[in-house]
Length: 333
Image 1 (cartoon, helix red, strand yellow):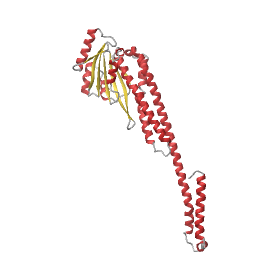
Image 2 (cartoon, rainbow, N blue to C red):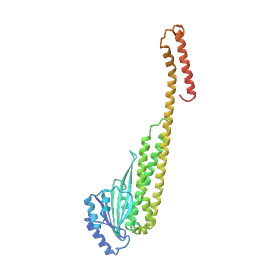
Image 3 (tube, rainbow, N blue to C red):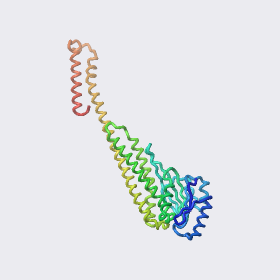
Image 4 (cartoon, rainbow, N blue to C red):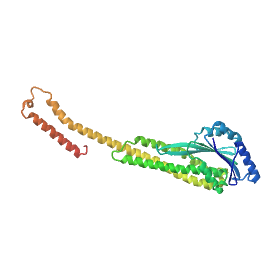
C-alpha cells in the first residue's frame, strides 16, 4: 500500500492529490514552472510504500521504467544490503532490525529505495523503521532537503543505522544477564539461551555488515549522484563502523561465555561424579561385610561367636566414618 506521497520543490512539501502518474506529471510541471529542473534538490517526488502487491508496484514500475529485476526484488524482498545501478536509477537495499523485549529476538525487515534524478521510491517490508518520522525530520530541515534524493537516502540510512546502535545496546544487556546467570552459584543451564542469542547476533551481523562497503562507495565519491552529500554519509559510516565493532565484540564475548559455561558445567559434573563415587565407596564397606557373613557357610567361626554381630556392626560404622572423613578432607564430599 502507498503510505505517503509528496512533491518537494525547493525544500517545500506539496501534497499529491490523485494517482501516482499524476504525481510525476505534477512534479515535472512544478520543476518547469519554478525553473528547478535539473537542480539536485530543486523538485522531486517521494513515494513511500509498505509491502506493496505486484499490481500496486506495477504502477510505479511502469511510470518510472524501472528494471524488471529490481522491481521484482522490491516486491518479494529477502535481499542483502547492496547498491546497484540500472541506467540513471540507483537501487539500494537496507536491512532494518527490531528488538523483541519478551523473547530477545531480532526481527529483520528491509527497505528498498529507487533513487533517480527527480524521484525517490521507498518500499518497506516488516515492522522496522517506519519512515514517517524520517519525512518529518526532512521537512523540518530545508537545508538537508535541498540535497534532493541524496538527502532522502541519507536520512533513511541514518535512521536505520541509529536503530542498529539501539539494538546493539539491547544485545549487550542480554549478554550481561547471561554472564550473571553463568557465574551464579547453582544457576540454571543457559546453554540454549547462549546459542539462541548467538544466532541473533550472527543475524545482526549479516544485516549490517554488507552495508559497510555500500557506504564506503558513496563516501569515496564513486556514486556521482551523492557527491554533494558525502560528508553526511561519512558520518553514517562512522556510526556503522562503531556498531560493526560492537557486534564483533558481542560475538566474541558470547563465545567466551559459552566456553566458561561449558567449563563450569563440566566442573559441576565432575564434582557430582566424585560425590557419587564417594558415597558408593562408603556404602561398599557394609555391603561387602554383609555379603561375606550372609553366605552362611557352616565353618565360619564368627557365626557362633557371642560378640560377633556387635563387632561386625562396630567395624562397619568405624570404616564408614573413616572413609567419610578422609573423602571430606579431600573435598570429595
